[in-house]
Length: 313
Image (cartoon, rainbow, N blue to C red; front, side):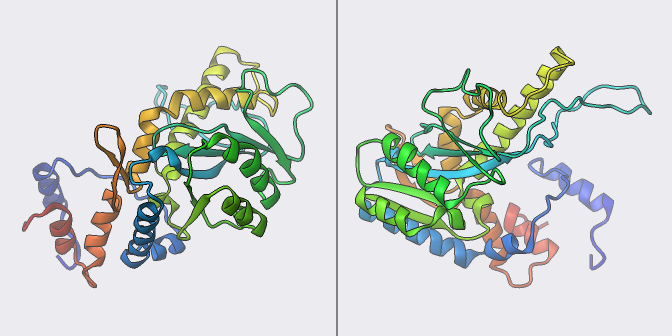
């Protein structure tokens, strides 16, 4: 066992535990691995629970929000497979031909979605780019196409405050990126009875609803739609001016009420009860399993399986 289990042992294990499957491990940087520990997450959830209780938001999911950005560069690849002759190469026509575009989204724990904010690199498109897009979307630009402090404050003023509803207080959860934090923003939040919680660094893959269940399906849908357009029209290209309409369609098809609610559940904010309100808050199921392993300072292969699957085999 010191050299690792044999193939025979692994096959028997897989046959006994059908919930197991072989997968290629995802790459994770050291910072994420270091911050994904019991102490950090426990401290965050204590703060979150105390804040929700003190603000009286336990049964008010429409007043709990999460916001963040995701970027599109045109280099994304579709995960869909195609049939082709053995030994031959398969190619996919590139349809997205823009620079970097960032979409800033905000979702609520009751499942509703606020208007999106698109950030273009360099400048806004010269041609009409608002066709087929909701009228309440916001647009901006920066040299890199990424979010900055000025743009975030603009979104806070023109989108979040007007569209988060009239009921107060409101809780907004986001990561502690430099572009999200400024004195002016904090003062505006206080003036509007908006309370802010910053996620621990390098934990958004576990604790942020948008990262946990929204951005992944959204990007895949954008890729699927662009591939479909390329197959229908070999000359089709989607530049800056056409991308907002494509993104709007992808958001409509992926960011459903059920999926948004599920994103909060998966990141630890559990929705339950007849009114689907926030009944209680607890750590994500995925992190519970990680925590069980971390509680043993020197976990072996056997103790890992016992902790995860409750088996003595």
